[in-house]
Image (cartoon, rainbow over all chains, first blue to last red; front, top):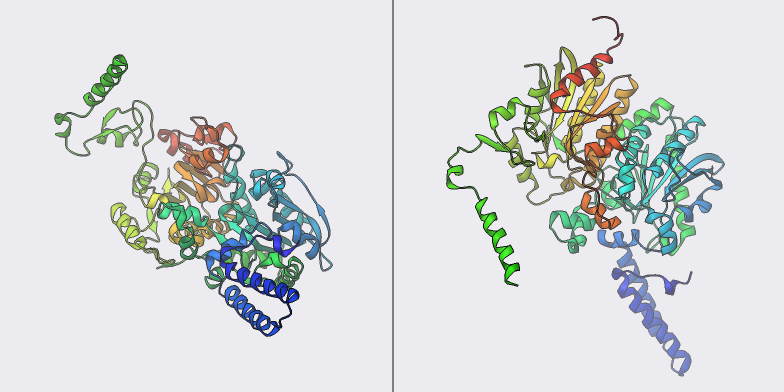
Length: 321
Length: 290
């Protein structure tokens, strides 16, 4: 993929401008006989500085945009880079196969694991097929089936979270969207194997949490985890969806926020500018984080894993006695 | 044209005629209650004797948590717990603390759920009753904490846990902390369940969003009150998404029963008896002649 085609975001505009200027200047020097190399060097230095400034000081709303970037790597992008021998397993054995969630078995650095992840599309056609990564009840029931299978065979479960939320549709309600999510929360609480939940993009409300009751929750630096989208929050709280940017800051939905609140265990750094700039490198960073987290959980008995998960979620909440 | 105008004119006149006359205003506030469904007017006292169910159309009025306790449990058997927990304002939302304070004064509760121990026909249970008059019954840190502690208490006492749900879902003003209460209550319920203990969820109007998508839907037995609104997503959101008109009874208790999502819809006048029987049938060694 060429970088030129990549969608840019508003906060990156100054960088794009400067990059354009530099390349114009470079072209110009080739056509006329003037030495502008010192100017170009100084501009390039400025570019590097600006890049650092912008990417090191990303605001919550900037991160929301990165998390939603159409080119942002998805579960399927990371799968072959992080895992080996992946075999997809379909269906919930009750109603159907929901392609908004994919799941299967594979190995992580030699260790068999079960992998489950939300899957959105990258173009319209795929998005229709995958329902924009917004699962129906059968998606959650497939996930639960595969978790139970993992438990039987004693392998860790690794969930990749990337959804705007569970699908709000008629069929979803008829087939028990609420029950499917609720069931996962309760059953994940009792899994006798290590469970890692990694937010790789958007973590939208209950539809995300249904894969989120892990021994550890990890978040990519530019991912979000929230009770409602910034737009939804703005329209409920201030009756104006245009205030989404303000809501994104107020709601504390970014990885650094959740790390500070003690809700997640680790934040996985992203390549500069966001995961979409270098999927391979990002996959390595994710692999490193999985290795580290599995190591931390290594040696815990089934009972210990369950009580560690209990204590983790038991402790969340802010109130006075 | 003139005729059309006449039609409208007539209607307008009719409308005006239904505006309550001065005489109606002379009745002291609260003495009579009008059914929002069939407009039937009942003496408030009589309505309370009927468990707040309209004698004409069976509409189940919303109950406060305290009314529910009185209606359900053995007299004077209820002991509330955790009334001292207070919500904070973790995200510093302007006006949030004041709203919680105001609802607390209005309802006499510390938060949108009342929890404690009590008995039904002499059988000990732990109950949690949500109250939609308190911030629409929404779940923040304290609601999650109180329910979790109630479940833990039931586990410790080895007794059934009953919950009456009434909630718009997770509370926006506490952000992701509210979302995580769904997981917190779930881990506690799993422990309770592993002990072989009974959990009955009774869904009342309205039970939606994050509450519907957590403890409300995972009872060993899920009951609901007639016509209660129960659903994951809001009706308007769904209509906008699927661009079709939804059936009238969409997301009602009866709709859910039809689609296999509930064990039974139970009339309020039968609730106490039904729950008593269910609890009785789960006593270890039940079935022998009592």
